Image (cartoon, rainbow, N blue to C red; front, side, top):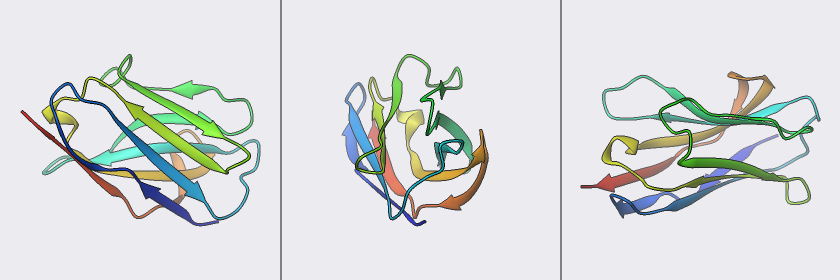
Length: 117
């Protein structure tokens, strides 16, 4: 399975953006798909995860209430709706998939999100 992320861009503080991650093949129901970001000079940070089968979601406190992850099983796609964006959300966002939360073995190429103040 390969992942293709898209939807990044330049936005202003307070704006919204929706990222998409399309998979070339099916995921197992037990798998997790997540969005991980890496800002300039920062470590990688998991910002959202969804269990492919059950749909359970996870968010860290830094994005809880602002980011929403969802999936479309028919389109083999995962989305990240980002609202109330802040400059500190500026990062390259990667979608990734694997057998558990944060335990990713397949990575997409990343899409750049820049939030201007």
